[in-house]
Figure 1 (cartoon, helix red, strand yellow):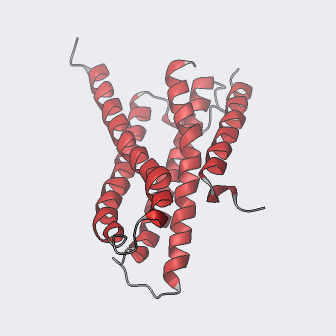
Figure 2 (figure 1 turned 90 degrees about the horizontal axis):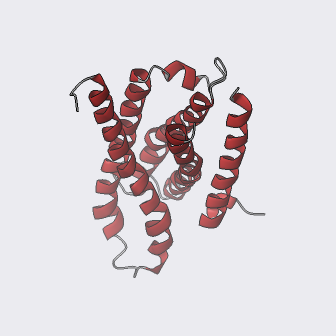
Length: 31
Length: 168
């Protein structure tokens, strides 16, 4: 499997995945 | 409307957004337009990119990155949540501070990439700094990957900035 950052689609999908993880973390941190 | 400290804070926010649009706009131009298009440009026209476009684009790109960070840090300080946000809201369990904090850290990583990975390597690629024929492809790969990392981070970074302002 190649580096996902070599394609624009892979880059955007990774960005969206990080966004979802971040939202979950923000909700977990917020009291 | 009063020209008071709230108005000053608004002006700093406006300058932060102006700088950020310039920075991320150029980042997306590099990744969504220039890099995919270069292979389709006739060989005799390609030198125009490193000689004429890249030096100007990289000038505005790196200074916009720095001014976005500077105005952003001033804004967070004025808003009295700089240290709470940098601690990702873990010291006070406030969602807004967690949200803006994730964005601030991603912005800081992105600006570091611009100034310490992309710019030094691009200088070799476009010939502003001397580099051997073996060094140039390695420099292009390092700059390209850092640019892709920044494009990836720009998506959650902008979510965090806008969400902290609007939904938390």
